[in-house]
Every structure is written in structure tokens, then in C-alpha cells.
Image (cartoon, rainbow, N blue to C red):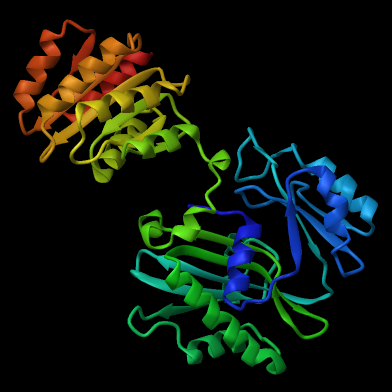
Length: 386
């Protein structure tokens, strides 16, 4: 789950991490009132969307007067902002953050991320702040320093201090840097984060460390113990099909292709998509109905897939374990009849009650193509949509 920058900074502030003073607005009429509370000579007006690269896309403006704040707010609110992360469709700006400026002496990068390869949280830092960490890794990989955090001990002050030395943080703010990192790790752990990124972390001319920008992602599986984080969720920033799928316990991710995929199990989903791509096709989605889906879930899965008008065919690939193939087959038949399915549908059933499931499919008299294995299924759906 993602949140906006202004929400991330609210969390940082709660954990004793310095951030600029600011106020979020949703209407241009509120800009003047917010600007009067800015106590610096300049203000920064920042578009709030769930995507990086806002500055390069014109989503961050430096205002030198109240009129500038008003004009920039009016310009940004309602605008479709297109960045390298939004794609060509862009995202509509529904909120802007108006905050105090600061005199920057030096910019750094600081991030905490879940390293899945090592099954550990890793803290990364660089003195090449203000640019994307991927760019730094490409051009100056020796400028990125990492510390692997032991999950039992947590981040130690020794590790934090070593990071400070490696990124050449001035000695007079070394203790502040250590405190900053320790608090950041506490936030990461207590709120079940998967990513906390401060870029840039700035050292001001007054020798203060401030999180000038912040990005935080959360593990949705941990939201049950962090209900306050759930309140930050902005459904307008999420795909409507993914929202609808979550209501029925379905895992759905929209992709860019034209072949809808219905599977059970994340591993099988990945294998199915790989096969489609191997044979020259493009999957339109990742849709996992789970290990114990009922007929209703399968019908809903079809409805969600068909909300995407790019879908030209559907490949159902089910391995029945706890889930019985005859239940899946009934759900498929009901969905095809209810939705008056008029695009190619290929199905492969294997496992518990697979023969019974295939018999249900055959006796339905529907235009459904049954296959024996995954490879044959991927080839068949590609053949049919062509």
C-alpha cells in the first residue's frame, strides 16, 4: 500500500524525524490561507500523487510570493501529471502540499528497504542525494553504502554511525544523523513498511537535518495491527479493478497485454504469464483466485477481467488441491452464461476432481476450449485471439 508524501511526513513527524512545516490543500481557494502560515521567504508547492518523478514533470514549484502560491496551486490541482512511473495516461492531481522552503547546504539519500534475497531489512545511504537511487547505482555505485540489519537485534547505533561516516556527514551533526536513522528504523518496523525512502535528506545551512521528501510503502498483510495506516489509503489512486478484486479476496494486478489470466496460486500465475510471453503474447493481468475460491469468486474474477476492454481472450489455468476443479468449472460455466462471454476462453484443469470438472465444461455446450497442459493452453489462446 502506498501513501502520499504529506501523509508520510505526518508519520515521520510522529516519530521525531524533522520535516518542513506545511499544509495540504484540495481546493485552490485554500491556497492563500495556507500561504500565510508559511514563515520562510519562499514556499514549495508540490503535487500529491502516488508516483515519483514529480519534479521533472513540473509537479514541484518554487513560489516567492502569495500570488505564486495561489497560481501554482490553481495550475496543479486537477492537472494530469505524467511521469516515468505513471505511464502515458498520467495521474490527476487532487491535492497539493504547500510547505516552507529551506536553505540547502548538502543533499543525501537515505532509505530502508526489505531485501527479499537476504530476507533482511537493509539501510542504504548515499551522498548523491536528490537523484533517483537507480541512477546513482548506474553511474556511481561506489557512492551507495548498505548495512544489513539483523532482525533480532535491529539497527544498531554502530551501524548508523558507520553510515554517517561513509556518506561524509559533518561531524557536528553525526549524533543527529544516528538519531534520525534509529527513529526511521523504528517507524519501518512498527508500521510494517516495505520501503521508507528519504530523498533528499538535506543538511541546511543552519546545520539541521530535514527529510525534504519522503516515500513510504506498507505491507498490506500487516494493516490489521496498524489501522491508523489503513486510514491513509487513497482509493482514487488505485486501479478500480484491483479495489473490486480485494473485496472478494482475489489478488489482481492490471498489466498491459490483451490475454486475461485466471489462476490459483502466485507461482502458477507467474508461470502462466511467462508461458504466454514466451509464445509471443502479453498477459493483461495477474489474477489469483486463491486456494479455496467458491463459484462466486470465479464469476467475480471473470467480471473483473472483462472490465478491461483490451482483453481479447481468457486463459484459465487451475491446479486443484484444496480447491476442487468441479467447483471451478461450475463457476466458469455460470460466469460465461451470465456475462454472455463472446471472446475466446481456454481452460486447463489439473488435480482434484479434474475429470469431473472437464465433464462439466464439455456438457455446458459453451464455446470453451479445453487443453491438457499449460504450454498447449498458452499456444491455443494466442492462436484464437489472432
